[in-house]
Length: 629
Image (cartoon, rainbow, N blue to C red; front, side, top):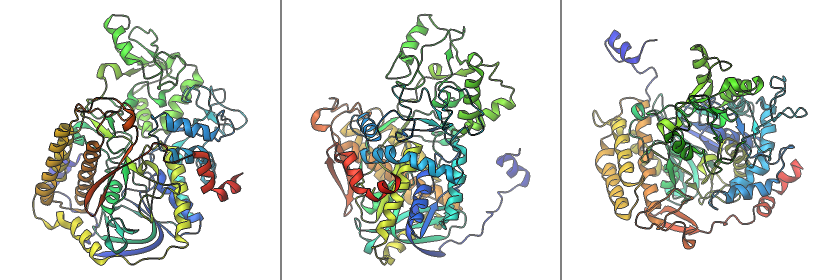
């Protein structure tokens, strides 16, 4: 394989851009429902809206067939409380999930997930997604139901005996979803980066009537006019990471996850909550081994851990989900570390594949790992190198490398405030997946996307097709093309590094009012002094530059929200030195932030603003309930 540097050295020049450049040229598309983001939530939203008879356009910055955090695959379909093997009531389970976050869960999203994600899974099966062990390949594995041929996860089910987590073949999902989009006539615009939301008369806080975009290969300017718009573009990543080459990246999210939807909705005037919430990066950046290179992750749920002498470690594989309740609130690493220091256990640790029953080893190595995210790369790489799980152990690096540094953080649960139609605070704008606050995982994205699609489609039946503001479109066009109008300036990587350094210094482990003010001042300086010097030499670098500007906006929102919460919170991973009291009753609430006429407005909502989950869900979905009962 020839590296890019070697190619340049051999050829003596940088290769020409391989696509026709069409900067400033415009293409206008009119549709009923516009989906921004072609990940799991976006594909489901498009399919659902199209099935309701709406004309649908889907805009995806990457390639829809594998884009998004769930694009490469998934191995668990979680919180499927309505499946026939479930031992919990869907409404009760939704309440439990909402309460498990200290009450900061998205009750609306969780109710939708628990009530509808089994229906979603069955629909996916009809499209070609694989959800059962039809070939009896894993007959005899623990948790397999011989009647339905579902593989119930025996250890990924909270409290051990709920049967709400089903093992699935997630690599089959995204291709099936894209194919169904095509069959239903959804117009997919791949390699198009949505850059801004259009509002009625160009007014902040007005009805959302479409979006603008950039073709990441040709540079063409896109204008999408719609009756309803659904944001499914995920949250932001790498805000605290300065250099993706040196520090790696959050391995569950691609670099394309840059908070574009958050930045667009913020500029349009939408209301957000929990934007102050962040956490130490759980899935490790590149200074450490990937989580998947050692046992202890969900995909390794049934792999026993042993020390360097073969002595079994009393570690559960997930918080509260294991055959040994050693440390129900975590992995038990703190206790294990003390035992290592006392000489009770010897380093390094290993995932003991050879000690497992053959069928359990097979389902882990040849199903769970091959189906989850990019785990197949791990399996193929190790296999090519000669690794044999029936004979070889896999080293676990968790204790040696420890947790991530406290300044390596990730946005963790902030998102748009929505109502029971998954409509945001702006008319015509809906949200799904990790665009919501306190989102869940793959099945949450699927179920909420499917739900938002049908609600938006219903809205379009009585909504008019408004006229977009030419001035707003012109201003956005000027904004996004600014970097290619310059002949020199700073590179997008430099701007990214500056944003991340500010967040590490002023809004990471240490939080005080004075640090927040310094952080905002620094971000404002970047916005006023350095962002206007961004230089891009081709459409790809222009896309990266615009992603940086989204991150810059996202970072500012985080600090504004952090200033507004004048208390610490265990549930939010939020610790203020100047307000050290943990979760005082008067601060046990949602803090909201938005822009109004360019000014920052903060507010609050009670934790149970969603109301009675069962009653409200049923009041808003009578037709759906009748159809599926």
